[in-house]
Length: 106
Image (cartoon, rainbow, N blue to C red; front, side):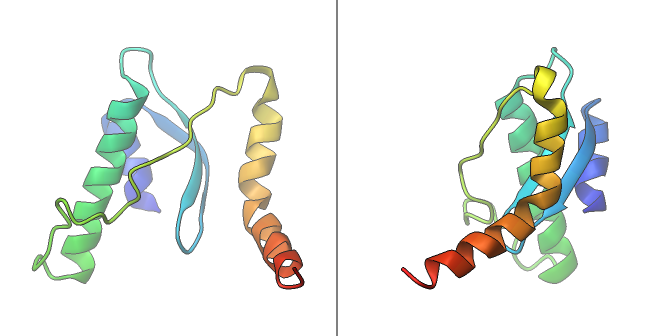
């Protein structure tokens, strides 16, 4: 998780809320207007994949064009709903588990 914070800081951004899931992550990030969201997300995802490769794959593989992260992402502005967005991030894992349990009975 610290890698995400360090990468955001390099682009003058700040992650003020975040939660790692087994196969994805949620973060509340403030990005200065001089940076485009796709550039910032691409930078964080790309550099993070390189960091993981160095740490866990012993630099044998750098995940370039390997699809380490999914191509997509979801972005929204928070504005007056900041509290709701932060609450969503904090509780997403519990909600995912609840939905998974409900889907077992379908």
